[in-house]
Amino acid sequence: MSNRITVDILGDWPLLSGPGKGFAYRVSCDGSTYLVDCGANIFNALSPKELFSINGIFITHVHSDHVRYLADLAFYLQFSGKKPKRLRVIATDRIHWHLRESLLETMDLTLDRKRSSIRQIPYEDFFDCVLVGPDPLYYMTMTKLAGCKAPPLAVMSADEKVVSPSRGKVLMHPKTGRLSMLLKDEATGAWVEPECFYDFSARAFYKPDMRDFHDKRCGLRVSAVKKGIWHGMTAVGYLFQCGKSRVFFTGDTAADLDLWRRLAEEAIPRPKTKTRAFLRAPFIVDDIAQYVERTWSADRIKDLDKLYGGTATFHECGGGENVVHTDCMQLEKLWNYAVGAEAVNSSLALIHTPPRLVSRFPIVVPGQQYVVEGGHFVNLKRADFYVKEGTSCRLAYKDVGGKYCISPAKVGGFEQLVCGPWRKTCKGACIRVRLA
Image (tube, rainbow, N blue to C red; front, side, top):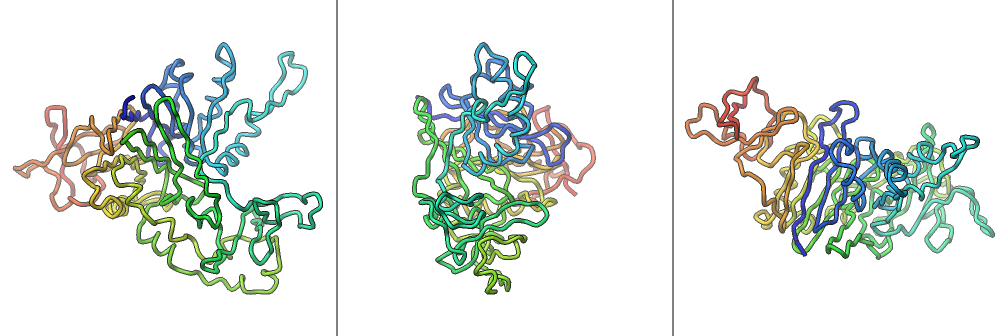
């Protein structure tokens, strides 16, 4: 049984790179093959045999550039083979809920074979839904339960008891109609949005069973990770482990260590939460942002070194122009803090990067393959800098003569490439560029 994990980059594009572009990564281990997200055109990247051999798909979040081809693949497996095959989708309960809602109209109605009536196809006929991560201890109920005096919308505990309004509430946004849960955290006394506030390890909101995914045939174990994932919607990362090899995908996240610390430490004064009407109400029509008194718990940033240390990490690095993506400099600060003494046993590659970038870390582009042993990329050509221009990525090396070198002053940080045409080509294997 091999301990190697192989990652093929099927799709990885800058933000707003063009119609139909998205993200998809193939992870292989000893004959088993999985996808992380399905937003790129995998039909161009994989053969029919490879598509049917996919053992499952892990979904980080449901933005269209990460799930754009999920329905297409489910239709393909269901109708194009000799017999229908369900697509195994592996995700947390909340991501499955979002997927079901977003795909309902797309997939559940069609004509019967005689074309004389409409046929409804259950979601489960297309998808084999596998849950990872823990179950929550609380949920929102939409209707009255038999024998229960609860209002139509209220917070319910896992043992089917209505939660007092002084402990939990349901809020509905007046314009979007989106429902959110507001819970009072017992440790801080603050009102919080629990999906955002609590890490999966928090027993105040989640059951203790973490529910990892296991592929016993190849010895692969995959864990859903919420720690340090921050994207403005329900999103998780995935940690793949096979023997001593570890690969971590962050999906999309706005990584900022200083911001995360403030989110975990600072209370937000909310006058609305002190009124008598608020304390009595189980259901409120209003924007939940007006009531959240703390954004994160300390558990969301605790033990980051155990997550990144000794791990080959594919981390989103979208540049500093978009608030829901990671700024280049902030990522380097986070990486240096999180790996610490384990830096020699850890590797970092950048995904979701802008179209022009110079970095001391490898930059992912479609068509590449990464082989991981332990926490390292073992097949990677080393360079002083990695330079991305459009969809091509080159290696760059310091020129001792200094004429066409990467400026030494830029070492230790990421730099946007601001030069014009390439200055000089180095035997086709690398380029030397000058930064302004």
